[in-house]
Amino acid sequence: MEKQSRLLCSELCVQRRLFEVTLNCTVLAWKDIQIDKKHTGRAIYGAVKAGSHCVPVCEIIAVQEKEDDSPCKDTGKWQKVPQSPADSCQHAFTANRPKYLLVYINPYGGKQRGKQIYDHKVAPIFSRASISTDVIVTEHANHARDHLKMEADLKKYDGVVCVGGDGMFSEIMHGLVSRTQQEAGVDDNSMEETLMPCGLRIGIIPAGSTDCICYATVGSNDPVTSALHIVVGDSQPMDVCSVHNEDHFLRYSVSLLGYGFYGDVLTDSERKRWMGPARYDISGVKTFLSHRYYEGTVSFLPAEGNSGTPRDKMQCRSGCSICQQTSSDKLVSKNEDSVSDAECRDTWTVIRGKFLAINAASMSCACPRSPKGLSPSAHLADGTTDLILVRKCSRLNFLRHLLRHTNKDDQFDHSFVEVYRVKQFRFTPRYQECDSEVDLRESGATGKQFLSQICREHRACGCMPSQSNWNCDGEILPHTAIQVRVHSQLIKLFARGIEEQPVFEDLYAHCAI
Ligand SMILES: CCCCCCCCCCCCC/C=C/[C@@H](O)[C@H](CO)NC(=O)CCCCCCCCCCCCCCC
Ligand SMILES: Nc1ncnc2c1ncn2[C@@H]1O[C@H](COP(=O)(O)OP(=O)(O)OP(=O)(O)O)[C@@H](O)[C@H]1O
Ligand SMILES: [Ca+2]
Image 1 (cartoon, protein in one colour):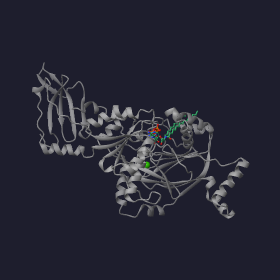
Image 2 (cartoon, protein in one colour):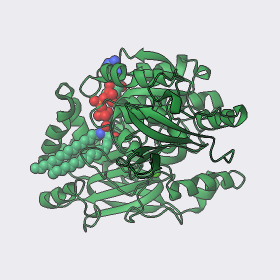
Image 3 (cartoon, protein in one colour):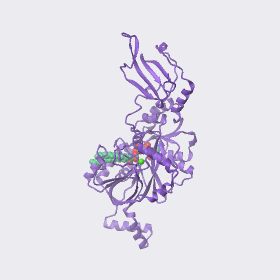
């Protein structure tokens, strides 16, 4: 038997069925053995009624030693694994696994089942995998963010887990990113600063209303699947956008930054929180019917060279080559000129107009409501965001555009929709634009005087330019003029991206083998 590729081979009897089991450094495999006593009296390998099964060793949750008390005891041929290959094998698949996790549960997210989901579905898996936990059930909004930012002894942990929805994830991400910048002495109010990547991975146990971040990084919103990704120590880097108003940091975003339609849906739905997840549909219909458009200027720095385009069919999947290319480019560019030097050479594209929606999707934003997301080919970790501009159009056309979020057609194949893959962008609503500011300075008025002056004038003539709010991953921003920069791969999740085939189907059922 070759030492590395075939460490163990045995027959195993489970519930009166005989299996041939093999274990090497990468795979545990087992197949049914049919005893053909009639003809040869010998076991026939491969002539199986049920199929063969295998599990990559790196995905085994736990190994439990048991006394063999089965009736087939005498037929068992387990051979002792030589200690050193067994150790290296074990080390290889447990090296990236977390041993101690800090868990925050939002008891009020989604359908208010966060605590129940954690206790019944997740805690037993962590305990079987010998993971220790400190669990905090939050008592108020921003409890988790502030605890992470100021109090938690992060050196103790191998990761942070949030049980809740996108809002709860956002709290954890803000806490962790801010803490990392504080400790590294990085000023997050400066847009030019290169942010320090976070050391701890974040796990998401979905228990919210949209669960877009979990859905777009795992491919489902199933708590057990997410718990298994945490246990096996998966790692998925992810881009984070910083959002500023002048020299003032506002928030980070990983999924959707939306002005116009999605800003208005969120503003309206916040007043209906008591309705639970249905609030988004009610506010969605209401906002659709109001059909408001907004004027302003969008400027952006387009992404370079081989980053693909939002309209190609290169969807971000597990092991995505575009995101991997970004990782290696980052390593190379560390020794070259700084990001801001490179960006100074780039030219900004400026687009002025009337928009029903301005959406920046840093990831696909896939969720159960929109299985392929707002930008199906956006990438999790490519250092860019897809900027989608939906210009003023008829209600019918806007409905056709929204319907494309739910079907297979090219979302962007409409004359009133434009999409760009960008590294940075800015938005200025019409009433704050520079020419107004020039008038203001010429008239010698202060900012406040000028704003109240245009308010008075426009109220009188009835053409007051309306303004929306920015929806930043489900939070309303306090400013409409914003500057956004994508920070490539700033955080890491316990995930591996969306896989074409579910991998854990048989795994949990067999974890005691
Ligand atoms: C005609 C059917 C059209 C269906 C269109 C469904 C589009 C759904 C797209 C969802 C995109 C979610 C992006 C993720 C954003 C998260 O960071 C954030 C935090 O959780 N969620 C929201 O802001 C929550 C945003 C929730 C938005 C829900 C919008 C529902 C729109 C309904 C429009 C109905 C028009 C009917 C006309 C008769
Ligand atoms: N104990 C708490 N009491 C009140 N609010 C809380 C508490 N813990 C967290 N929150 C806040 O609740 C908000 C919503 O939580 P969460 O994201 O878990 O659910 P959701 O809004 O239903 O889901 P989604 O964000 O996916 O739409 C978050 O913004 C979070 O800051
Ligand atoms: Ca991205």
